[in-house]
Amino acid sequence: MPVCSIPLSALREGKPPSAKQARVWCERLEAGEILYFPETPVPIPADDLRFLLEQRQTGSGLHKNIAYKPVRDQLSGADEKSTNAAEVEQLRAVMRRYSASVTAFLKDFLAPYEQRWLLDYASFRPLEEQGRDLALRKRNDMLHTDAFPTRPTRGRRILRFFHNIHPTRTRDWVVSEPFARVVGAFAPGRLAIPHADGRMAGAGKRLAQAVGLANIVPQLKRTPYDQFMMELHNAMKENAEFQRDCVKESVNFPPGSSWMVYTETVPHAVLAGQYALEQTFLIDRAAMVTPESAPVAILEKLAGARLV
Ligand SMILES: [Fe+2]
Image (tube, rainbow, N blue to C red; front, side, top):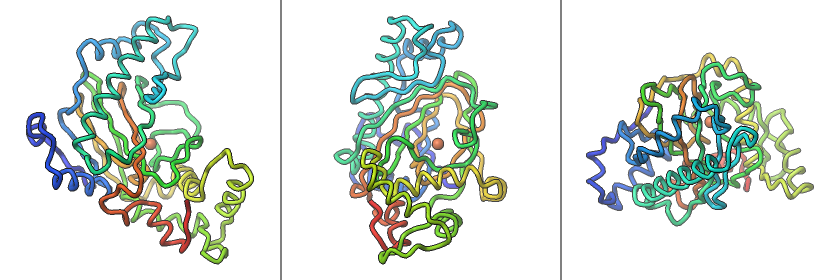
């Protein structure tokens, strides 16, 4: 499985990469590679790190997974009963700084995307991933591609930048082959894609129903593309054969490392690890260096129809 390791020395000491190099990084991500930094290029201030790692021990209400919405400067997921206002404010400030520093780094590192991304949520993940008691579709330890049930991307790609902030333990992932290779196992046999003339490929009708639903309930704003991606996420987790037999590789990210990947196209599972930070970007398909690699392009080609 392609993991491209980038030592800090390759980042030219604070200088932005050349335009040509930035395009190469984008191209590798778009092809399904994980760009991995053995030492994070976005270091966290020591006080912020200490604060994050202390949450579990202090019994604070901030010990669960927390989402931060940078656009609104808002936190969600904090347990209000056991959290005091000062702690919430401090976490908000830590997440604000983290989100801003990742954004500043990627603005140069992935320069072709900068004008055409939506800054999505950041998250703090202090929970131990191993043995979490979650419903099948919510489990992180089953291979899946990402789709957000309540936040359709309308064809934008989901790029996530991670940082393992655990002082001693690795964050253990398993990854499988990227979308272009695995989608054939799920479409059109398992998930229906509409032909341009409205006939359905395969036996399923769920995508057609979804198209109808999107028209009737516009507030869902889930396009046929979003519906397919949601169904793909569920179908992967529910398919024991795929989980067992697909080509897969373990990747253990050491403490202090960062990595980024298009999680809507690279099937991934988190088996173990505790304490991570993450920032999500939604990247416009028009910003792709290789637009034909975008999942919406692959699906539209398969369907012979526009899906967004
Ligand atoms: Fe995921």
